Length: 422
Ligand code: NIG
Ligand code: FE
View 1 (cartoon, rainbow, N blue to C red):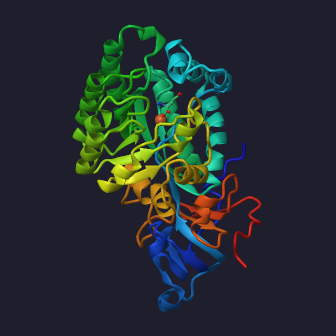
View 2 (cartoon, rainbow, N blue to C red):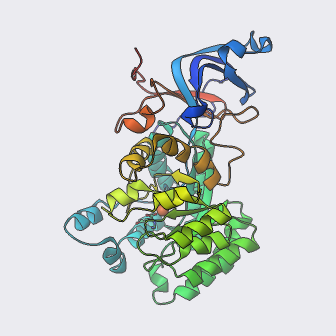
View 3 (cartoon, protein in one colour):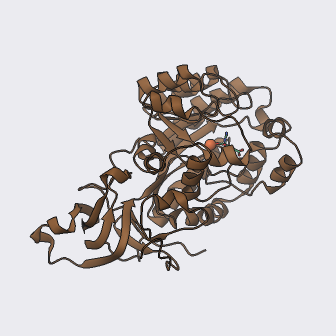
């Protein structure tokens, strides 16, 4: 596996010209015939090429070849670090088995827990790096990676350490989330409250002290943990000054989104069974709705998240891969934009905001990601497209020309695609 090394990639410093800019992902704010200046790995200026200040005239020039430049994409909900895969379970589901039934029978998440525990840290790193590559190749510059397939202190630590190493090795901004309350490990069968005590009183304090945790999540569901158990996890997060987010209302409505909103959660995610009261609570708290069309599609769900209610209440909507081996083994955020439009009837501007500004906010990193602005680290993507809508239009096709991560240039392999340009 050849990782794109942040150390050897060329600097992006200089003037990027012959481009069009989409600073906040909103096509209404597009700047045609633009220029973008990078100095010392940060964006120094952006605007129309005609308005480029003379002070930048002597800098290195990068010809963007009429590419559209967007902020680096943000994948705000992934379970990227795990051992093995679950293709057999997919076959079982195709033969009629139900996701929740498989989980209750000891398959599902717990089978990935076995494989994750058995893998060494280096094996986990190699497997996870292979899954990260296609995301990076689509212009992702920041992503969340959850734990939750270890379910013991040592194994959760191993997952989170691998997540941090991936960020360092690839020069991508990794935001770690501790998801100890993902499933009940077999050794705690029938003792869920005892396991939650381990999560709150042992695992979280140790992992937070090691600097491995940026946020805390739980799976609030009949096959996961109850609202009362989720409350305990959130109270522990508060004791460590850590923000929370929640897997809520995926298979049923337990009021998880409203619970998350009461804790000022960064996001509530999935939300297929969210009701109007939950939407209102999220709007009031400023909690982002993270929609996951990959899981909806792969589970052949038919219960749509309440998009219209989210719009009416002004809840910011993010879109993410939910990459995981059980319900969303997808490694394309562009495909998720397409599915957000086709399956959830989101608009193209909503899908673009969903993988930029709103996704950054779901990470609690709106001040660092999802927007092209002076002073920010140079994280952006160059696309060979004629119009921004193409980012949600193609599926199974990647129009990336190059990505700049942390001020370094990574050209796309085989970027010979000319999009809709004349
Ligand atoms: O986000 N819902 C819980 N967690 C994952 C699925 C995990 C698994 O099945 O391995 C999700 O869909
Ligand atoms: Fe998830």
